[in-house]
Image (cartoon, rainbow, N blue to C red):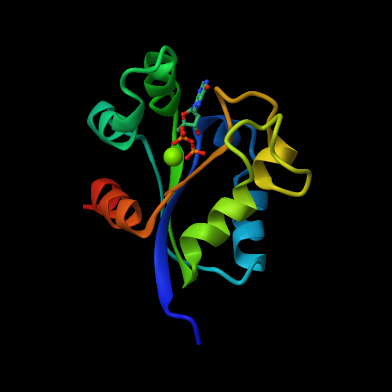
Length: 135
Ligand code: IDP
Ligand code: MG
């Protein structure tokens, strides 16, 4: 058996507003990954800045912060073998125009500015993000 890993995922405000959260949660469950914690909440400006600190020098940074704090999100801790990689695979590419059909971003978005879902990019960042959003 592969070791169990955890990742942090977040259904972004566009998808909550457009009432896609049920279908996205269904896809995560159907994949075999396990939802360990889940909460509908508003991202604070402090959490947004910490989560996107690697993008602070990008021209789209302020739009990204405004977007992620613009309405409720669903914060999710997902567990399973290679959970980080598996969630990234379910999500699809960052730019929905590049995301394959059948992936969450490929099926629910057209615009990189509102791309439906977040998922940690490494087990180390997953631990950091779970603390950031659930402590
Ligand atoms: P990821 O969400 O696939 O891990 P990151 O590079 O970590 O991608 O970027 C975080 C978020 O920043 C993306 O999900 C997207 O919302 C936004 N973003 C990334 N690149 C661009 C861009 O070129 N234009 C606008 N927004 C972007
Ligand atoms: Mg990322």
